[in-house]
Amino acid sequence: IAARNIQTNRFKGLSGIRANSQMDTQLTGQFCKLNSECQSYLNSAYEKMPFSARSYNKILNLARTFADLDAAENVRLTD
Image (cartoon, rainbow, N blue to C red; front, side):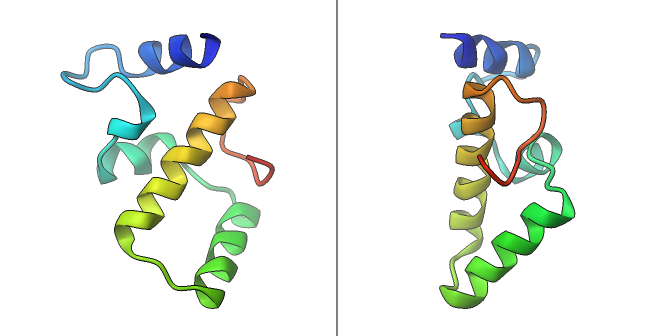
């Protein structure tokens, strides 16, 4: 419930967006910023098993949800 409240507050004022899973590419870029360690890890995963741009966005949205479950402000490598 706490994670849902975080998402509700994040998307307040955005029409039709209530959850991380509904973020488009622009919102994903805005709310799922990765530090260099996270970006490096994601690039490494891509080199081993290439995935589509759509999959990339889904991975980031899911990581944002995990961070919300931990009440973390930013996506972390552990998310």
